[in-house]
Image (cartoon, rainbow, N blue to C red; front, top):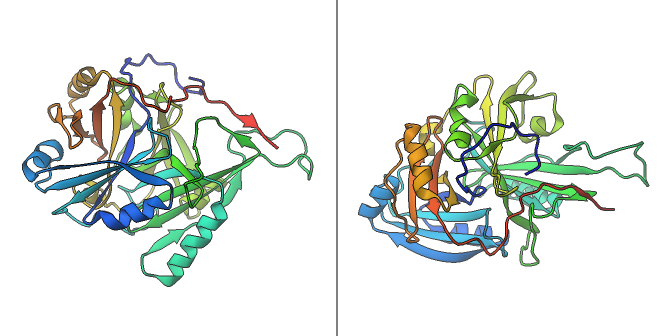
Length: 356
């Protein structure tokens, strides 16, 4: 895979890009309707009784799960709705930006201003709290050359965030370039949005060393060494609503088997609200993410050796062999065993193709 990543030798785990983001709810009807407007449709439904949910997830509650897929993309970027009969709590909910414990899911769109206007209207009506940030443009990948004018138009990405009680989004729209396999928008998506392409985690950590197991146990590639992003950068300043003088540590990880399903981890450098105790599995909101691998026993052994206390390998609600663990930064994962390849073949080479 072509990145600016470090060159450390990784265990060959066959790990996927991030497969699913999971959101806890007490009633799935609204979530199914809401994500339907983004192009997500139910691919399967399953349930666990309270005893089995306790063994798998540590939550003594009956669970009904809905796995949703956007278009034909089944290799990454799926959504699982976890409908708990007895949720453990309300989750992080509507909170200040960069609240520790926050999780954000990212998707591509072809109409970012329509989304901004939609959420801004919803905010003004006030039935559900939403905080949309104004879209900001930047040349994130250094694709512009020469003097820009009408005929030599800017090659940029425009992005914004939407923070809510129910879910947190980041949307991005490309101008002048495309990345094959990274954000596929189908005609069925009313809001012109793709599958989830990557995911942000505001973690309860003191150092990015806490996330090193993503490479040494799961086989994910660190894109680079930890770096500092701050209010001097247009994108982070706007998306994370950074006050003057504020910054955070940042590090990205990506699967060697898929350019999508990337993860970005952030540790605020300064005082921020810490609600990570409400990020536990069983509460409402985004509480869990999954990967799949054809080498489940190998990954379980590596996670155990890293003293991350995984559950035993057991059947989840979809009758998939899997295990769950939570790391020292409060991030929870489910690792699923899959031997058959996805219908949608993952792209492993990152390419930027310029378009007019």
